[in-house]
Length: 530
Image 1: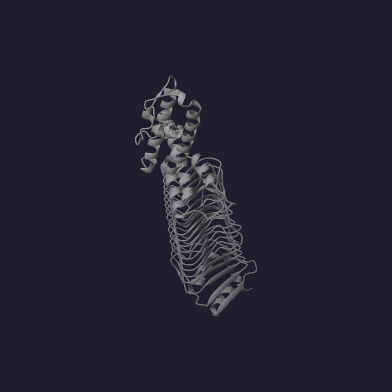
Image 2 (image 1 turned 60 degrees about the vertical axis):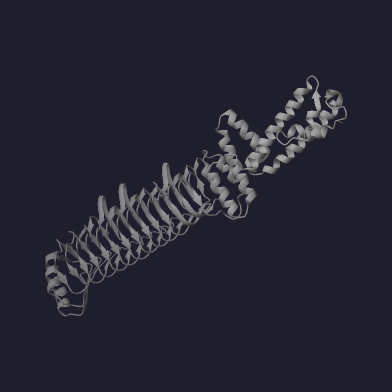
């Protein structure tokens, strides 16, 4: 009776493309190794076999692709430092796979497989694609996939139900095509679920709908030369991405529970947060300190940050739009932005704006009063008022700019002691802190009108004329009192009787106050914060 191994040997020796079904039979791994080592077919496909023992191809060379379908391995195959044309696993069961520094001139494909131990691809080199579609890597508490230094010339796909229970590591690897993780799950609670520190990807990185991560994600100093799109992903763990470099857009329309650290990152496109929900209560939900975004940072109205939003020292060359729901501090200190779109900005706690510099504001939707109110709620800093006024002035809105500067003087005055506050109130209501010096003319008219009334009621009987030919006129007398320097000499013609001297003294004092205020306003002598 012909054994399964003999039938397989005959098929392989016949050459060509071998597609062989073992029909559930058992094949010793050693026999299979010897057969493959001597054979030279175009391709070998083995189906429905149980392979016992270690399939040891370490440092070996197979010049043809090998395919396994519906096969069961009772020991992890050893492909370390082997050279293969291609390896294809479909619906197979393995207790692990040892393929450190393996070299494949074509593809590494594993679809629908179950691996109950560690898969090691450290230092592996694949000239084609790597597909782990629908494959489950089950090694809880340890590494499910160890692929540090892995080099893939084309795409790396972790899709269609891919699941890893245990850590997935690709530290310092390189992917020449896309990195896709859609309808995939990475679970390593209490540890790093996905470690891509220093990973280089030449085309888009797509962790989109159905991508679930339970555990931390490490993207520190990774470099993605396309876009990074996490639309629809759900990440329950901290994301460490300080020093990350992305040449295109970064789209984070996803659930992130654990905080995202993007300090010092460089984004060549826009950072799009519309529809995202970031949660890290009491800590930074999103940290973009010292980040550089070459285009826009966009937070739409449906963005929620349940934790601090930190942009300290960041640079946004385009639009900075903050229109979401911020449940903790928003820190914009030392941020530089091309344009600030604050329409819809609300925060339940502090908005920190010290040294925030922006070149323009959203064209409509936010009135100056709303912005001034926001500044008043901020701890006093002259820069934040001067910055807003500068933008209004550049936009051709000088009246709005003056309103902001006056509000800034009010805020400064509120912190001063009472003598300074008293002077500030005087300058505010007479010359509007020097921004409208001619406003004092109305006070002069009021004072003249009051003097006309008071001295008209007192009449000439309240004075002793020094010149019997003089005719008493209450308006001229009042004007002479209110002009302490440039006087007409009309007051000198009259001597007050009794308590009238106090009335004239009051008008003289008022004249000095108005005169000093006028000079201060005209000469811009009121101290302003610079």
